[in-house]
Amino acid sequence: MQTGLAGRTALVTGASRGIGKAIATALAAEGCNVVLASRRQEALDQVAEELRAAYPQVGVLAHAAHVGDPDQAQACVAAAVETFGAVDVLVNNAGTNPYFGPMVDLDLARAEKTVQVNQFAVVRWTQLVWKASMAERGGSIVNIASVGGLLTEWGIGYYNATKAAVIHLTRQFAAELAPGVRVNAIAPGLVRTQLARALWEGAEDQISAALPLGRIGEPADIAGAAVFLAGTASSWMTGQTLVVDGGALVRPSLTVS
Image (cartoon, rainbow, N blue to C red):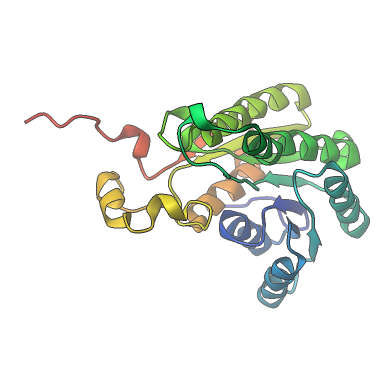
């Protein structure tokens, strides 16, 4: 399948590990230049070194930026445009979940941090790439939401609320930025990442047995979907949320004997 990504430039937030790293790697494998954004420069440099060794034909830029800081976001996008001329693909992947528990006990500080990173960062980075190059050249934006944005769960309700917002932001931006820019989202189920470790560690066998496809997700499962949405194979898709969850949403809720 031709993706049309060779020679393009993609900016991936939260790219130092997990889903973000897997997406950046998959895009580089398609011949896409990649800009890696995350908080820690050292971690980004390590990923950049791995990508340059594996895919010497593509350009790689590692630029530390806290996704929730508007000034750092602007500096990162400016560096991407200065280095590669444009940003053709934006992957809004970075996320956080500083609170676990019932929403009746959620405090303002952690609520604001969750919104800043999971929700407003999607708005800010989209604004920046639009103004920097996509308004003239077009492009594709892929937002990483969560299957949690489509259901209720104990303990991570506010995280899920921000991911539900990402799903709506995807639709809204798709309507506003068409036809030049396509905006789609991925709603992953439970994936083996550091962020989700508390949800699967020690219970992986039990969780896997309850899923129709028999296992929790791997970052590469989400990366494949991101390449599809970023590239030409999805050229007639916008405003959609692609669920990649091992069948979690279709599993029977009641067994009748």
